[in-house]
Image (cartoon, rainbow, N blue to C red; front, side, top):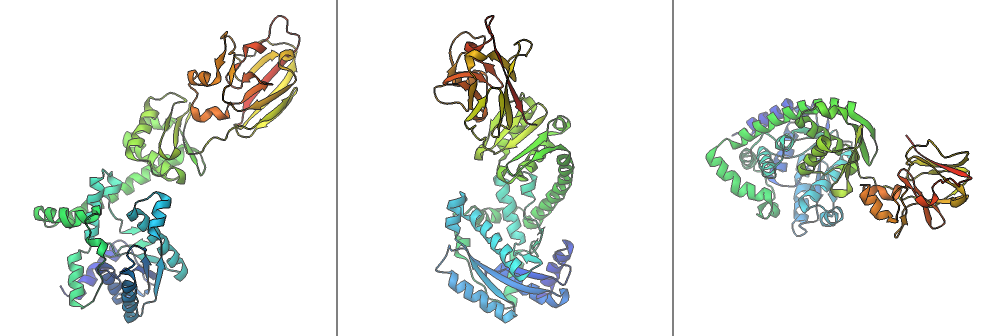
Length: 461
């Protein structure tokens, strides 16, 4: 193959995916390996035709200190021969992996993209060009297949993602190697690409050769499959976007609340995608896997109001009467308040108000959950409101005997993450009322009651 046909192939890919329209400033990710050397060389040869300004960046991951200096020197010299401005940036992958709980490859990828973004901002680049090839696409699709990815994962590496472009994504490594040989272009070899302790390398050296025996056109076949999945994902994403726009009740940095009703008419395929999008759009909720999505769907389908799931990373899924909450927010424990009689206090942690007043009688006030009337002479006129404490007990109204508060919460099926925001109204050391739930029998109204204390519990909307 002569050099020109490779240029034409890469230019066809650039035009096919509208990677470059002309007159752009492009930052090339340059490692010194054969793929990135080919990419930079071809873009420089297309520079006049597309009116491009090209810059290059080498990212030192701090993983191969014995090889990195020579690679940087090679990249700098190569850029000088092409009159391309060269930059280098360093990151500490191992430290970042420890801090974030990532594996080395994940950490390296995230830091590499951060530095590319940083460098693109510094040189005011319009696009970042990466050297992923058709072979990289094959390996990625196979890796994700082995890990059980859905269609989004099997869509592989996107040719274009926002301002990131991959002009070599339809070019095979064998064509790149031929181009480098014919043009007498040198390159460096990353020793980590030869180690078989990485899944990608095992697939590259062991699995792909076997597949090529069965199908010599495996790269083209998987590329077509990935393209089909990308097109279908684009269609599904449009449906999901429209559905989610109608379903969001409220959203914060830690939570997203969705209306329940639309779930009832949705196919499970769309429900699964809506949930994944909802989680991914809230930064603190990202990273939930397929198994947990299925558990959430089961909760939506068969759970009762108040039922919940405790998921990894402190995430909770809570089914209400009309809405469904996904949250990582940790409820704040109620502080200590003094409640004068008469008077009222605002419980900022519980987003509620408790009001105390003296009334003429104690009849017709419901079941004692949101409001209750007690004997004011027994309670006294200075009450405290607090969270539960170890050793708390009370005499539930109508129960007739003492009960530990912890046991009461368990029997009442009050979720453990809500127990610290339930207001406990006390008179001295004695519990008077569990606001929203039950009063204490010791303070109930009797025939001899002369003064009546009315307590009201109102939650903010």
